[in-house]
Length: 256
Image (cartoon, rainbow, N blue to C red; front, top):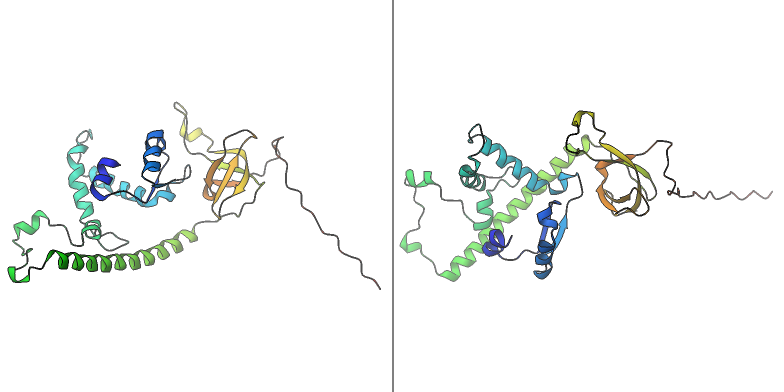
């Protein structure tokens, strides 16, 4: 993080990552605390909460796969070229390339040199450093505004598509649920595995999609997304679990 980002672009305000060991280590947490970086993480088994990075990684992997040898050992020879191609290509959602989003202009590519395109302004058009900075700020402001509008439109379209295929339950504290855990132990056949575990108990509702669950009184609480839960309908109820009592108000008899 320090070498790859902070040295180039400065300190972050927020950082969202998956639950990889490198991001959960004491050293990494100490750096975030020292630099006052607001560190958040994804919920287990729910890559959508880090969807931008997951999608970018998938795109880069697909691009590299087109160039590597069959033994795949030369991937490091292509990673920089693939990254360059990715950064100079307009994004489907923003309709603007990542390079232009940061620097305010398109990346100068080798093809631009080959076709002898005029990329430099004439001497008569040179401006002062201050005017250049102001002009660049205005340009970036316009670019980012266009990107925000495009992202908003894209987000609405993706939400409509997502809502067509999802049926989400509204769970409450005390509900018994099963948890989806797609990972399998080493040596275990995936096709024969049971991915829904439980029973788990919802001990707290954080939002419409995030819940805290436990499978025993002294177990570590886990924050999990609603997409990885479903109601438990079995008869084997944990002994330590006490269902919430429903109080029914008696109706007052009519006085004639």
